[in-house]
Length: 209
Image (cartoon, rainbow, N blue to C red):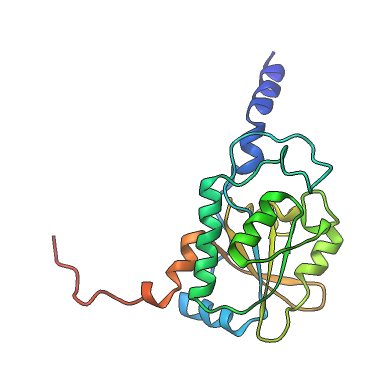
């Protein structure tokens, strides 16, 4: 009976599990904001984003990625998150070269809203070619530029136990020889915290309570 109840619980929670993950703590310790911004401006990094927020339901198995109707699409929050990412990229004046996306409509839409373009690739989707994705993550971008990959929370296991929430990003440095180093895990607002206008200290010291 306990086994049956546990199985039913798994089925009932399947939709939420498709979007979130029970482990939210990150083991990736980012460098100081100033150092991170210098790294981003120098280029040579991969910015791997999970798609923006979507409704909480389990979608059927998708075989035609061009048909968005049965897919879990961005909701209003997800579209706003994508727009906010794009605003931060422009505000930070980061140079972006390639923008590669999973073929799922929510990923292509997030990339298009945030970066104005997207090239869909099968290896980025869940269940895609893991070896091809690993090679993509290990490939250095063009000198002075960063590349963007727009995919899913688990990144096909490429980040170990790390599982991104919707609209979160993982910054990594490829070594060009089949490997890469995880640099920082970023939420949407973390990008805006890097912007100069949000790093200026207040003119007066806070008053004591």
